[in-house]
Length: 86
Image (cartoon, rainbow, N blue to C red; front, side):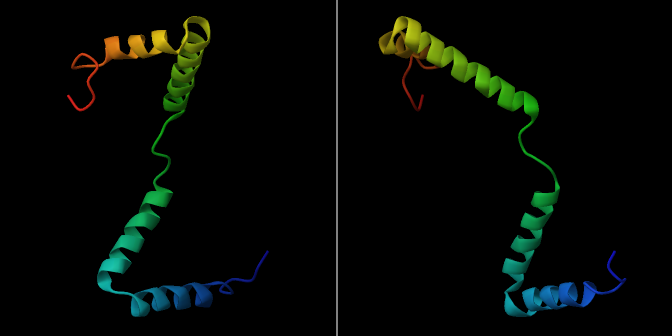
């Protein structure tokens, strides 16, 4: 257990160096990024599970039916008749 008040001067010095050594725009961006770091993950567990299921289906289709069948299957499901950027 550390004594109370030991780490605070170093933290205050770091904050002072951040404020004095950077422009206001850089300080605002830094504080915003720190807030993002503590806000939690962007992706949920279900997102990762869905991605793994998609990858499994893609690799299974490629292995069983081949690359051409996989490409045709993807094109059928794309909006704009398979043209990118539509």
